[in-house]
Image 1 (cartoon, rainbow, N blue to C red):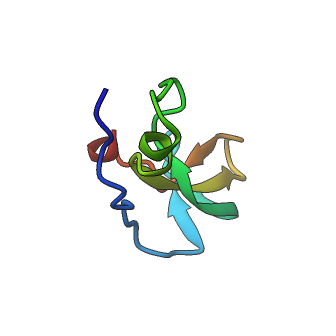
Image 2: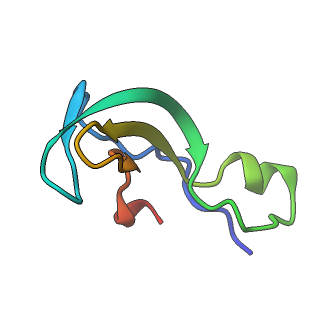
Length: 78
């Protein structure tokens, strides 16, 4: 298996987001960067794992419907 470029995906920084379920305003409550986008791959070497594609997690909570989701999710990063 060949390693994917270690280019991190970028997402605009915003403290709020629009809920994907009900359309209300959601508040971001957790954020972390440089997270591997593929958690189910057993890389053949440590170097391949370290250089795999990385993304960001920005969790938001909708106070209207209770939905929690990653506002930084980008399917193009998979």
